[in-house]
Length: 242
Image 1 (cartoon, rainbow, N blue to C red):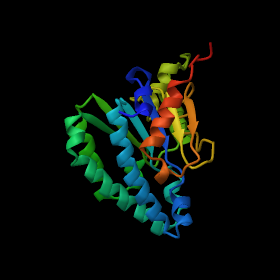
Image 2: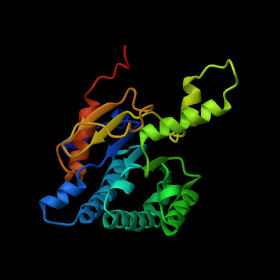
Image 3: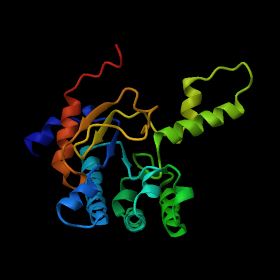
């Protein structure tokens, strides 16, 4: 065990951390590659980060794969390639011995049911079904998801069913979000060197999160980079407004 790894204690890990994997396309451009080759490199890196996070003892990890707008605004060839990559790697997850040995529940959050082709949705439903009773680790993928859309649809559902005179509660809002089954986000990591959020990502669940912005493009954000982010998180003091 390296000195870097020994610094991270299981009790200091975030209960739930999110990675926004930005920079795949810029990584590809810098190397004279097609955009989807950057997404392929990013998918390969995701597999490595999942294994590393689980090895370190992480309980719940989320990845933002694509926003609702991504699939509409990007060139057709790139969008088709991205969907093919999802299909390939989610099938590998489904067939992974580690997923079942470690009892990892896989969840997909967003409007993917409306956006994705039948063949991809079949694999995703198989992942959900095969892991639905697992509860030791949780692996979430946000696909065709935007936080502002999530909040809007939650408010619409509440408005439709709220009796006259009743007040809207925090619990009511959380229950109607697409992220209703997820715990609050303790740490949000964004790669790509642009320190910002996009499309109100998980706006309700990041109220007290810690942020970590890496200058590295996502395919270069390797296992050592993840450990650095987690060590940085462990060194912070969380006051929750106190």
